[in-house]
Image (tube, rainbow, N blue to C red; front, side, top):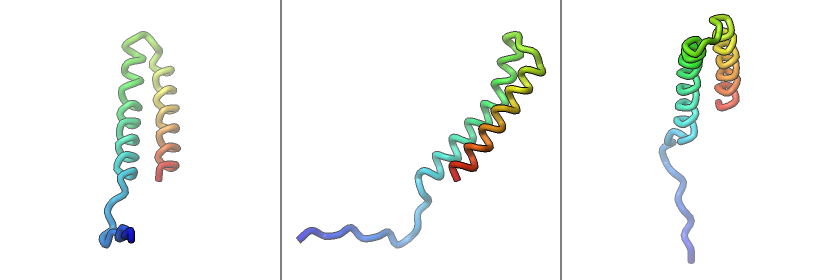
Length: 67
């Protein structure tokens, strides 16, 4: 007779919640580094700022969806 696996007694953190926070952390890092790289390669400061704002908006939306 096959045995059924027992349910875990203590609630462990969900593995995807840790990976979601890692994704948000890397996205926040890219919001900082991408404008710097754009300016170094000749994009205007205004264009780099607009890119940073766009990335920040996408990061915020993804963070909400991942929760």
